Length: 486
Image (cartoon, helix red, strand yellow):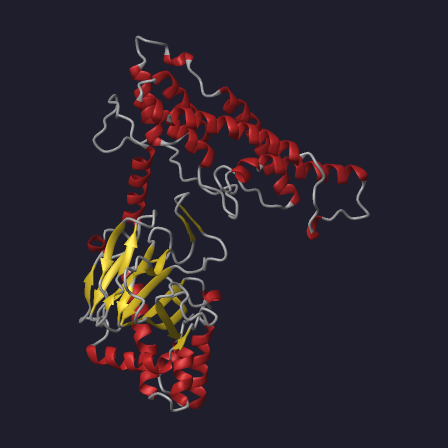
């Protein structure tokens, strides 16, 4: 069943690719920067037209790998078909076809260690049955790759002469940019030369690669606060995560909670939508700048506004230290938020307080991808949630697998507890339903790009210095623009 599906998918791909190329032969649409000048010779206009035709045809593989409504293509889309096909043939002992599919995959990624090992395994299994040297990659793919490489060579040479950027539509790389594949074959630990490792399911290989990347992530730095208790990523079942207790004291929690109940406004950050994620809860929020304005106006004590600022700065310092960042970590957005269960609407709830998502990309469960493109806040690099209370029911912070269903870790909020994590698709997360009471926290997003620092925070510092120096951190604020999300 799987084999027939993959073979049919490839047949339809080649048909669609041919149709895409046919459409490229039509009139080309000039953008403002490439509108032909009246002074150009006819031959130059014709050459420019056919350059765009070749670019269009060459990019058909990227076009076909991009799902409707998305800007980015599915990674490794065409090679992935041959990867899955070779494993499917292996499972039914069709080693000739498995070898053909493996060789086809290697036309895209000749340095893929795991696939080279699979190829060796299939060749060994065919000994005495058929000469492995008589087997070649898919003929359709051979023709495609010959044309692809010629087009690539032509476009790369023209890109240098005509000063336009060439992007490899299969690998998503530019000239000189290193691909993720290994150029040198390395044996896995415990596998000696001459031995043949049994092929693994592609998803298993992918998870091993992801785990290796996770281990290379810099984390585990010493937090510069003695009272803070650190529970590292191992206890949260995922890399790029950290759980910390005692970030703020019980007294600071109480004071910040009073600030929250005094200044937060329903729907803040969500264009006034009081229940942006679920009709069963009310959402309220406030920014650092708003806290300062209320403090200056005497609506809340100035020390409360100062504590909001200082607690968030403490969180930033902890995240920067734990993840061993060598460059400045800027605030992107700081939001004091409360979620309140609406009485009479909590029976038989099966929704979430905040649906599963990632902070800097669009989580696509079906494609098992996280698209780093608008409207996602792609500039966000790290995130943190600092909790102010725990006297409510539900409201647990959860991490999941990319399927947005399988929970990998759950954190029960309590005073002074903070969760920090990398903001990408490696850390899908959400909040379970708040079924009684009010859950308040400081939600923080950070960026390594100073162009996206939180302007409202800078304004609060400038205003504080203009009125009275209520906190010295303003003078050295490195800080962060964003729109509310939590």
